[in-house]
Image (cartoon, rainbow, N blue to C red; front, side, top):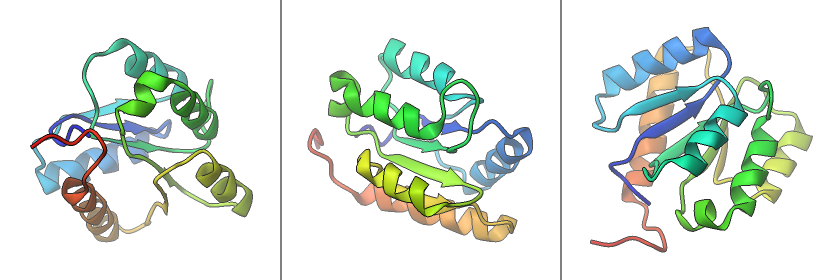
Length: 141
């Protein structure tokens, strides 16, 4: 896990992207924040870049390649799977079927977006700080 790598956010809603950008600006992490509006462009980036992201936050309902399909493709790609990039769903609503399907694809978390900015900021802070403390199989001191 590359704790200094970019935080990838895959979110097709422009308003949510702007809110998340403000949240991360206030949290002032040193990680670059990279947004994608669909799963297909995120997958192209992940498979083409040598940069190893720190965390991936993904919406579920997106055009071209939804979050569940994207997670499956990442999980099936040995190179991406071995990078141990935490993949978290961050979505507006959670149907039980989506939650079950997400965890069956080895997702590391499933979160409902808070409607309140302060709650969103606190949630993101908790998530990022958890992963900053977490040790992964390829962790090197």
